[in-house]
Amino acid sequence: MSGDIQSLSWHGLSLRWGSASVGQGIYAAPPVFVLADPDDEPLSREISWMAIDAFEALVAAYPDGPSVENVRDMWRNLLRGIDRRIAEARLLEAEEAEENAAHLSPVMRVAGLIMSRVAEVPTWIAFSSGAMKIYGHDGEEIPMRDDVGWDMPGYLWAIPMEEGQRFALLSDSLHQAIGHGRIQSVLSNLVRAERAAPALLTSAALGDTANAAALVVDVVKPDVFASLSDAATMMVEDEDETDGLGEFEGESGLGQETPGNWGLQLLGITRTRDDGTIRRATAPPPEIEGFRFVSYLGSGGFSDVYLYEEELPRRMVAIKVLARRALGAKDTTRFDDEVNIMAQLSDHPSIVTIYSASITGANHPYIAMQYCPLPSLSERISDRTMSLEEALSMGVDISSAVHTAHLLGIHHHDLKPSNVLYSSFGRPLLSDFGIATLSITSGEDVMGASIPWAPPEVLDGQLSGRRSDVFSLAATVFTAVTGKPPYGNIRREGELPHYEWLEEPLLEPIFRDALEADPMLRTATAYDFAQNLREAQKALGFDMTPIEVPREA
Image 1 (tube, helix red, strand yellow):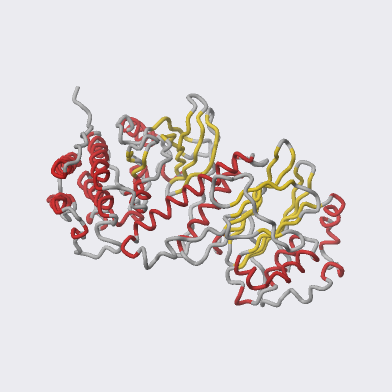
Image 2: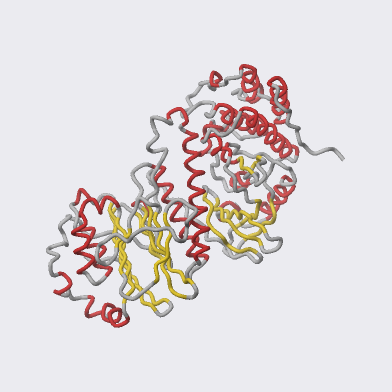
């Protein structure tokens, strides 16, 4: 049984690594070596996917090794994105938050090594979420410290890169199954990384390896590197190497290990979800003149979002890279038309500003837009940091944005709390206008992830329109007011929204009209909904938020 063999010469040093896994995730693509070890909860798995996507983007942007600052930016924004995703999940299960506290507060277990240079000296940047250890050549834990990432959760620290180093990453299940003594024995005796990794895996009983993974990385001395790479020595067992280890191969009953290479088996089944569907591969961060890549922000069904720094004017921007299929036909005219409409919309003070758009050399359309660093509406609702006064004011602002879009003949199609962001000045901004429309041109379903806020006609497969947006708008504001989606966690046919969750009785008729199942009986426009919210503000003694829509010339 042999592992996945990889080697590399880098700035005068020789590296060699091996990996083995059964049902776990390893990403070994220099300059990054990562092991993600989620539990069985879907949210934990999704968070691990986010981590691997972030590291893939780092490799694509800095193939010769990122700087300490690059790593720090990536780690900070990864943690920020994870917080946002957890908040969204909590919002969807708000009714059962206490009962589901464990899976709604997932522990991210991820650790690894990143090849970098500090003052031109080859250096490892070691990192750990805190729930996962890194081991040295003697099987002892590498002490975790925080001399790189000091202001963030987890640990980031620098280790000078030296010949003779060995590092090992093990999943928690494997560590528990084989114990410290076995780890120490394997790492001390097996010279080849590609043999040490599967040896660690097969040291456990079959029942203990369902979610097991091991990654071993060596900085090898030149003479040793040459001998290990020799074809003759690779085919022959070295007696000294296995002395004292016993019969480590075959003890678990595994026929052969699944090599954990190139990040394609995170969560155990390459890029396949639990339902058997293939997960879309992320688009690499594009090289764009005048912009510097900073870090990965997140991914959706049709796009990946990255943080860039624009050189002139100097500012941080979010760049959304759409999947190729979002273009639909090969002709890019529709994309150009949509971007032009979105640019007109971005003049509105409550819609995310569009700066520019184009198509990369790899045929990925992208849009450069305003970066919104503050917690989203989903996070604020989940964290219970939004008052009724703030919720109603936000509702008027976003209603103004929706009505302005409708005047231009464009519908959002995917209104929900996670699409309401906040600017650096605390202003609510509606995002993703036009993205759903671009997706519709490709014939894809865009409503699957937004069922709690989708109108009945959309769930029935009918075309959505202005009043469909009004329903989703009202459902979003309802969620901000009550802390829960109108129908709770599960929508049943014929069920009415939970109006009893509204603590202020005067709000009930406003939401009853806007959440009417029959579109023809529903509040007709977002402007009308905003006016109703303003009347509620007045009755409650709150300041009335102005409705901001275009003035006629």
